[in-house]
Length: 134
Image (cartoon, rainbow, N blue to C red):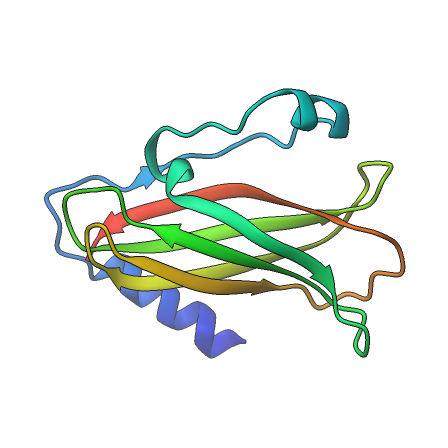
């Protein structure tokens, strides 16, 4: 795990880009507000869509399958943070997924894998997306 964090830090630190990182944080809304309000489609946040949200039947770990579509004009790297919440909006776990050198218009499917057991139905939410030129 430490190696993965170190690699991410090195990749972020060594990117040569004339673009500033496009960070599009989204505050976790209440469960009711999330259903009533459409997701923000501007910036990097609009490049990420959750296509599956489930709990593994064997490990009981939550996961979110993400589809990243690079809508920018340059090859980009992505860091996507996801949280897993229960029906009462209690945060159960969080996870990070990354995808590197996604060409303009290209799609990338990645999984954000939680490591805490979940015994109830969950909801997956993207809480932060960082996109920066490769």
